[in-house]
Structures are given as C-alpha cells and as structure tokens.
Image 1 (cartoon, rainbow, N blue to C red):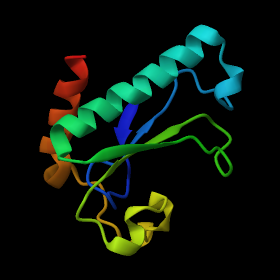
Image 2 (image 1 turned 60 degrees about the horizontal axis):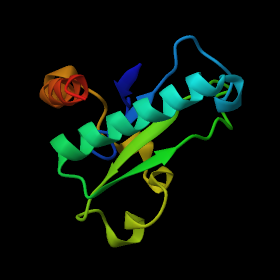
Image 3 (image 1 turned 180 degrees about the vertical axis):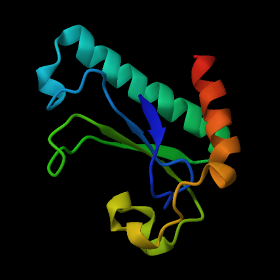
Image 4 (image 1 turned 90 degrees about the vertical axis):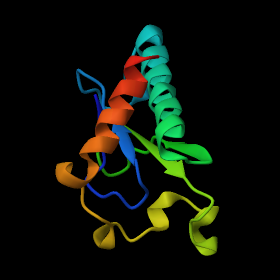
Length: 118
C-alpha cells in the first residue's frame, strides 16, 4: 500500500506498507524483497514527477514499529538550510500540516495517476 503520511512536513511524504504485514525486509523471500524495493522506487519516481522535489530519500527503519514499512520522502531545494542535508526526522512532525483530503486530495490523485502509468 502506498499512502501519504499523516504529517506532511514535506509535501508528498509517503509510506509504503506491504500486504501482508511482515516484521522486516529480511522476512520476505527474494521475489518479495525485489517487489517491495521496486514499489518503493515507483513511489519515488511518481513523487519526483508531481511534486517538484529535487531528490527522494528512502528510509526503512523499523526500530519503533516492528512491521516493514518504507518512508519515501521528497526533498526540496527550498528547505531550511539546517535541515536540507539531514534526515527528515529532524523536522517537528507535531507542528507539520496534517494530512487533509480537502487540502491534499489533488496531490493524492496526481501521485496515484503517476504510479498507475509506471
């Protein structure tokens, strides 16, 4: 599943969630790993296409949530200097705009269309 993050600290911040849920990437067989990583980059390509991001960061952590998920994070040239080269986890997620379909619905649709074209 590809979803936009609940906190949109960077426009288009997304997550990839496997179905079925597994604890980590190593729990998947070779084909499952390849598919998960391919899907992750498809989301990244779509975000590059529709957000104007200059690059995409990919993070698979699993330290707090023992279920495989990938953070797909668009990065922008207009980010504050002190955050531009650091992990996106340095942003204040509590102060970030919350996902709101009335605000982010068009972005969601554009990302969906870009993914479907891949």
